[in-house]
Each structure stands twice: as structure tokens, then as C-alpha cells.
Amino acid sequence: MELIRRFGGYLHKYRAHAAGAVVCVVVEMALELLIPLIMADLVDIGVANGDTAFIFRQGAWMCACAVAALVLGVASARLVAACGNGLAAEIRKAEYAKVQSFSFANRDRFRTESLVTRLTTDVTTIQNAVVTGLRPGVRGPCMMVMSIFMGFVINPKLAVIFVVAAPVLAVLLWQIVTRVRPLYTRMQSAIDQVNRVVQENLTAVRIVKAYVRGDYENEKFAAVNGELREVSTRSFATAVLNMPAMQFVMYATILCILWIGGGMIQTGELQAGKLTGFLSYVLQVLNSLMMISNVFLQLTRAGASAQRIAEVLDEPLDLTDERARDVRVEHGSVRFDHVSFQYRAGAENFVLSDVTLDIAAGETVGIIGGTGSSKSTLVQLIPRLYEATKGTVYVDGRPVQEYPLAHLRDAIAMVLQKNTLFSGTVRDNLRWGKAGATDEEIAEACRVACVDEFIGRLDNGLDTDLGQGGVNVSGGQKQRLCIARAVLKKPKVLILDDSTSAVDMVTEAKLRRGLAECLPDTTKIIIAQRISSVMHADKIVVLSDGRVDAVGDHWSLMETNEIYRDIYQSQQEGAGL
Image (cartoon, rainbow, N blue to C red; front, side, top):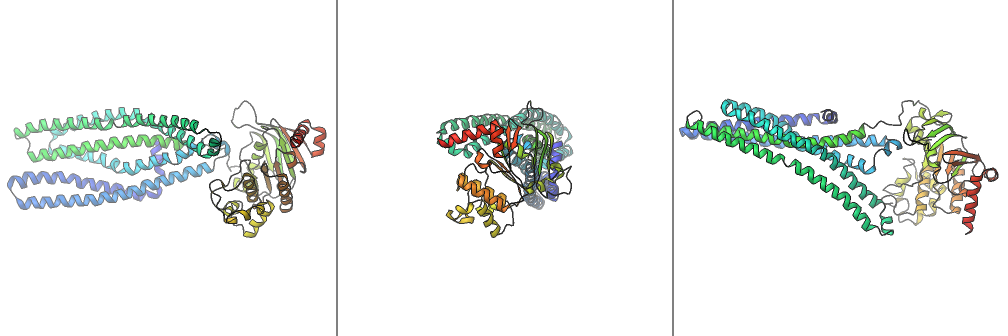
């Protein structure tokens, strides 16, 4: 019930639609309940007395009620559709907005395929529960109560059968619901796994084909698909028991009524028309019970999906603006003050340990170290993609928590290790850096990032469609486009996380000169594997196992730091092979 109340709150824009649908259903139901009474009088009075005028008059009333009920039914269906689709849109929007507010740490707690399922399949399940369940959910209980009441009006003795039949059906329904609910939860998790395998295969299709692992991927998909098939079969096989249970109760009730009612007609206690009308109400009651049972099953499945969505909406955000003040990044100096970090609270080891480092505004700093030395993790603390576990990160002398997140990240341009381009044109992708960038600004950024060297070879220049993920350009071209996008921001701090690894050394030198000319006052932090990428920096930071091992320029580190010297010599030897 708590979940129903909570998600019902997303109906605030569609309350009028929901109320209108309920009114239409109730009036439609009232008209349908009148028809058996009219029919009973038609038989007992019109047919019994041979009154043709009365028969036609009652028949006309029945037709009028039926037509009005039809119109109201169509109106309620349209209103319910608007209500259900609107609710789904609001839930989807709220869930997507929450995912957008996730930090990397929040994001790490949910698999990508699970979030996709929660945003699509789970929301659709709730939508279907409203669209197909609101009308019977209102109609069923009202119809049952009013039909039982009318049954007591016609013959209280026969109506007692209702009182016996309803609890029997309720017990059967409860047994079905309690068994099917955990199966629905398992089914949604199985959909997550199918989405995971499909997503991985489509993303890494080149690797799959290069390694000829198509058969292995087929087997992996068959396993998760089989699991989904099995749990879905068990879920629906249990749910469909609802129908035979309903039919058992319905036919047993009708037999009892015919048996007792037939005897009452023979003794003169009941007229044939009254029994006919009473049977109509019996069918209404049993149909109502069937509708209620189906709604229960829908709500059971929707409840499992709602719980999964609520897990996303209730995820506590690691990063908030509660300490933020109305301040701006003016210069771009960065300081790490005894910073330590671990990805999971309570983890045995720290990824970064007691890092203290000063980077002056406008300075160019290189960061180098072996694989797994946490170079990328260190710079991700500056724009608060992650929060430092211990210690403080300062920008312009202020803790990063004092800056509004949106402004802090807008003042820091970061070209991540994994280059990401979006579907659309080259121009659209570059304007992620600055939405209103002019053609002159775009041309300047392309010149600085050496994009102008290949942009003319693309089919339509800046208007070339890159396709999904930038499949139309090479790895080095992707890197330069991402750098141009960052340059357009004119940031106070520019972080290049191994973002020139796919370009040649001549192009890298041009990039370095272009950045120095275009962004002379910008603080530049360059993470690289090649010493040639950072040897011209104002200072170089050597990381080892998440700790600062040394800080200095190229020549001082060559003399004093063994790690740096070993990296340099290994690269020189490799270059000579």
C-alpha cells in the first residue's frame, strides 16, 4: 500500500483524468445493473400479461441503458489510457532525473542493464497495471457490492450463497498471489541478465568477431534466455490457476442457485423472471470477482516492478550541494590535502593514500605511474565525480564541496580515458562543450586539437553524422574531437586523462603547443603513459600504489626517482626495438 500511495503521487497532473474515468465507470456500472431489473419486469409483467406496449417500452429502456453504458465505457477507456501513459511518463522522468544526479559511486551500485530494465520494462509493467487495471479495479468491487445488494433485494435466501462463495474464492486467490509474487521479482531480474548479455555483445561485437567467439556468446545468451523462459513459465503457469479457480467457484455457485431456485419456483416462493434476474446478478458478482482477482495479479507484478524502481529513487546521493555557497572558480589552482579514497566504505585497502599535492593556477602538471597507480581516480576527485574518503580537495583555496556541483564541473573540462561521442553530427558533439558556440569558435577549437587535419576528409565536414558512439572516425580522431570539445568550454582546469594515447608524437606536440597558446591561464593536468607526453610540464607527479612517490621536473626526477627513471628507460628501449 505504501508503494501504491507513493507512485500514485506521480498522477498529480492526471488527477482529473483519473477522477473522470472513475465517474464514467461507476455510472456505466449503475446502468448495467439496471438492465437485469428492467428485464425481470419485462418477463414477469410484460410477457406474463401479454402487454406488448410494456415489453417495447422496457426494451427501449434497456437499449438506452446499453448505449449510454457503451459511450461511458469508451470515455473511461480513453481517460484511463491518458492516465496510465501519463503516470508512466512521470515515473520514467523522475527515475531518469535521479540517475542523472548519481555520482560515479552511486552508479557503481547498479548495473547498466538493470537500470535500463527499471526505466523501461518495470515502468511499462506499472503503466499496464493502470491502463488495464483501473477500470476493473473500480468496477469490480462496486459491481460486486451492488449486485449482492440487488440479489438480497430479489431473494435474501438465494443471496446467502454469495456469502459462502466469496470467501472460498478469496482464499484460493490469496494462495495464488503469495506464490506468484516472488516469481515476478525473479522474472524481472532474469530480464536484467538478458539485457546485460545483449548489451555486452552489441558493444563488443568487433572483439567477438575478431576472436571468433560467436558460439560462446550464443551459449551465454541461451543460458540467460533459458533462465528467463523457465521463471516466466513458472510465473504465468501459477498465475493462470486464477481462471480455473474462478470457474470452479462460478459454476458451483450457479448449480447451487439453480438447484435451490428451481425448488422455490415449484413451491411458488419465486417467479421465473426473478430467478432470471437473480442469475444475471450472480454472473455480475462472479465476473466482478474475476476482475478483482486479475487486478490483484496485475498489482502483484506491478508491485515487484515498483519495488525495483523505488530502489533507484531511494538511493541516497553521495554528492549533494548542501554545503555549497554562491562562489565561483576564478583561477583554477588545485590542492590535495592528505587525501585518501576507497570505492566502497569499509573496504580493506585505500585506492589513494594520504595524497598531498599543490597545483598552481595556470600550471601544467603531468601525472605518471604504473598501471593501477590510481592516476585517473586522483583527478576524478577534482570535479567531484567521486568524493574523497579522507582529507580535502581544494580549488582556488576552497573545498570543492563549497562550489555548486554544476558550476564546479562546468569550470573543469575533463577528457576521460574512455572517449565518448554521441549520435549526431561532429558539430553537435563539439557543442557539448559550449552549446552556443559560433562557427569561428568551433574552427579555433578544431585548430587547437588538430581536428582540422582530418575534418575536411569527412563526407560533410562538421555536419558529418558520426553514427552511434562515433563509429565513423578512428580512435585518434575521437580523442582529438573530445579534446576540441573540452577546449570550447574555455575551462579554468583542463584534465587530459591519457587522451593522446592514440595520436602520434608529432600531432601530440602540435596539440601541446595549441593548448598553451589558446588556454595560457588554464591549469592543465595531463595523465599519460608516455613520458614524452609530460616531460615538458612545469612539474611531474609520480604515483605508485596510490601514493605520491615524487614531484619534480623531468631532469630532477631522472636523477632522483627510480620509478620515473625505470619508466623512461623502458620506453627508450621499446622505442629502439
